[in-house]
Length: 62
Image (tube, rainbow, N blue to C red; front, side, top):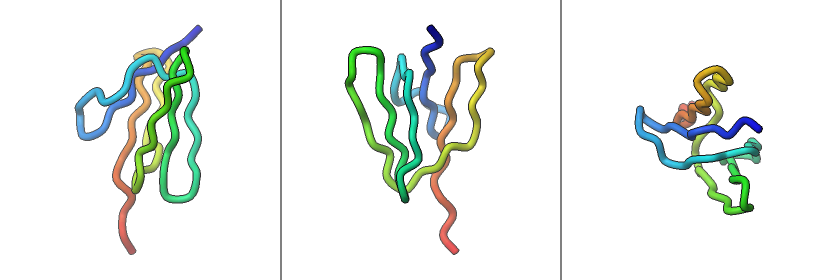
Protein backbone atom coordinates (compact mmCIF):
# COMPACT_ATOMS: atom_id res chain seq x y z
CA UNK A 1 0.00 0.00 0.00
CA UNK A 2 1.15 3.56 -0.63
CA UNK A 3 1.03 5.89 2.37
CA UNK A 4 1.67 9.59 1.90
CA UNK A 5 3.32 12.27 3.98
CA UNK A 6 1.13 15.38 3.96
CA UNK A 7 3.22 18.51 3.50
CA UNK A 8 2.19 22.14 4.12
CA UNK A 9 4.71 24.97 3.66
CA UNK A 10 7.56 22.45 3.37
CA UNK A 11 6.74 20.80 6.71
CA UNK A 12 5.34 17.28 7.20
CA UNK A 13 2.08 17.77 9.12
CA UNK A 14 0.52 14.30 8.81
CA UNK A 15 1.95 10.87 8.01
CA UNK A 16 0.73 7.56 6.59
CA UNK A 17 -2.21 9.13 4.74
CA UNK A 18 -4.09 6.69 2.53
CA UNK A 19 -7.11 8.91 1.75
CA UNK A 20 -7.54 12.55 0.76
CA UNK A 21 -10.68 14.42 -0.25
CA UNK A 22 -11.34 18.03 -1.17
CA UNK A 23 -14.55 19.07 0.60
CA UNK A 24 -15.49 22.68 -0.05
CA UNK A 25 -12.80 24.89 1.47
CA UNK A 26 -10.98 22.06 3.24
CA UNK A 27 -9.02 18.88 2.58
CA UNK A 28 -9.70 15.81 4.71
CA UNK A 29 -6.97 13.18 5.07
CA UNK A 30 -7.10 9.81 6.83
CA UNK A 31 -4.38 7.37 7.81
CA UNK A 32 -4.30 3.58 7.76
CA UNK A 33 -5.84 3.25 11.26
CA UNK A 34 -8.66 5.71 10.54
CA UNK A 35 -7.26 8.81 12.25
CA UNK A 36 -8.29 11.89 10.29
CA UNK A 37 -7.40 15.54 10.06
CA UNK A 38 -9.00 18.49 8.31
CA UNK A 39 -6.99 21.27 6.69
CA UNK A 40 -9.40 24.20 6.41
CA UNK A 41 -8.62 26.80 3.77
CA UNK A 42 -6.29 24.44 1.87
CA UNK A 43 -6.30 22.72 -1.49
CA UNK A 44 -4.35 19.82 -2.98
CA UNK A 45 -1.38 21.22 -4.89
CA UNK A 46 0.58 18.06 -5.75
CA UNK A 47 0.37 14.28 -5.42
CA UNK A 48 3.78 12.62 -5.86
CA UNK A 49 3.48 8.83 -5.69
CA UNK A 50 7.19 8.21 -6.23
CA UNK A 51 8.12 10.44 -3.26
CA UNK A 52 4.94 9.49 -1.32
CA UNK A 53 4.09 13.17 -0.77
CA UNK A 54 0.75 14.93 -0.80
CA UNK A 55 1.37 18.68 -0.88
CA UNK A 56 -1.33 21.06 0.34
CA UNK A 57 -1.40 24.80 -0.22
CA UNK A 58 -3.45 27.57 1.36
CA UNK A 59 -6.29 28.59 -0.96
CA UNK A 60 -5.82 31.91 -2.71
CA UNK A 61 -8.41 34.52 -1.86
CA UNK A 62 -10.04 36.23 -4.82
